[in-house]
Length: 155
Image (cartoon, rainbow, N blue to C red; front, side):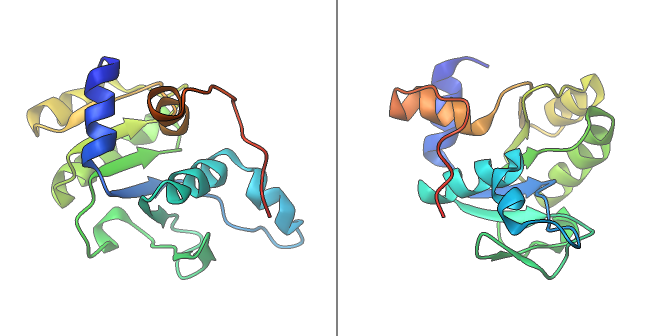
């Protein structure tokens, strides 16, 4: 997937289901939550106008960055343009099947993640497949002309 294709995806997408957004653990400092990669990426994409639905079966019903967490992709009742995955590669096949089932146009596996099987499922379902790329870093590179790995976390 080249930069122009990724730019077109980001320009034509409005909603992101983010699988693997972290919830607050009991006794954990709430500031730690803001520093977790998925949460940083979620907030960043929200700041640039995307509606981001957090997906985490262990935090369903909680609120993260102003959005209510859903248990599963299939529990989302609005159309999703991009399914962005912060889970281990070995979970990608199941997530790809659900991505196809909900009719999302893009399956995006974050930096360090890839799955040949998820890629096949995506191709067979006419879903655009991106792996081993951070959606936030790609957005910054293509629209912001800056490349910090993580921005300063704002309170």
